[in-house]
Image 1 (cartoon, rainbow, N blue to C red):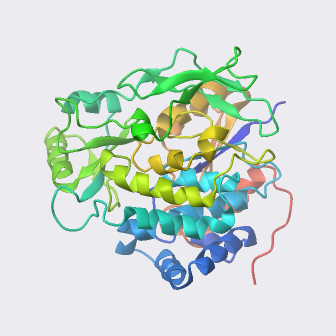
Image 2 (image 1 turned 135 degrees about the horizontal axis):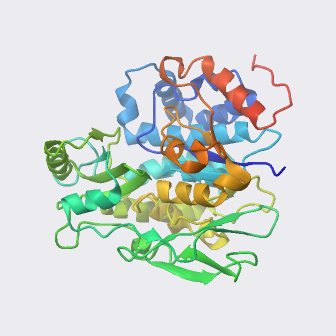
Length: 422
């Protein structure tokens, strides 16, 4: 019987939690070592981040992007390193927002030794960009809305949709040692700048794949903005599609508050996310440019040929290409481009979810990454399965993390003994 493929899901901004994955720290060396290396390379800043990470709730520091972003990057990378010790490591990596940067480090696009410097460069790029304090149009936030993106754009008027399923459909196997998967991107809608381009042999059957056109050029056309008549107004944009009924908006605080009140008046559930910036919106274009320029100095590379896992980009909805991986502005532009998390995950489940089936390894501290998948037919009928990597609720961040993680590795076929760090 063909083995199920495993997909490592890594969280991004808004999913940070007090002591996220801290129960693995000191309990599993393969997690502890990269975390200590990260903190050590940042010196006194690293010690402050370690303290903020290990502090119990409530911890308002985690609402600050300068704290949350580096920790999400470091924890995501360390979690991936630890999962990589399984007898059957993940075949695919799907990272949300900064989680995709962690995935890139795991496959060798960036040197893992540079994670601390990457986090620092990202923080510097954010300086002076719509911080969540103060007043005025330049100060931003994010709002989760329990509504399908299509209905939300219709409710508030004017935004082009993120697209409908592409005509090519499905996945095609990429040849090569990485065993990659090409995800059919969503075409149409608001002119996302997507194009059909030649792929490596074994693509959609005809040597075709859907790829993002001209990454880095004018935000590559992926952003859905309020510039068009009848938009949400005030610079509010669709920042992420996280599930069938999970859409995230981003924009200036004042404009976002007006949208929030309008939705509440209609009886729609909304929740303010823990973010001091309007990530994945046009407000981040300056930071995206600065971060891209900084990343050029890190020399991004194509994924290692022997990398255990293929990155499926939630920016484009397709497997990361070598050209995109080497382009620093592809990674920088991620800050201003919407996150297509659910479209990418849904395509994985639609295409591979039943045969051979998928194991979805949820690396979030609240299981939010796998929540939308639980309602997909492939998961409901048992062909695919959600496997949590961390404990949740009262047990989160404590010893139960190590137990849940060990169970996940066993589920992946883990057969090696691991000893606690002394």
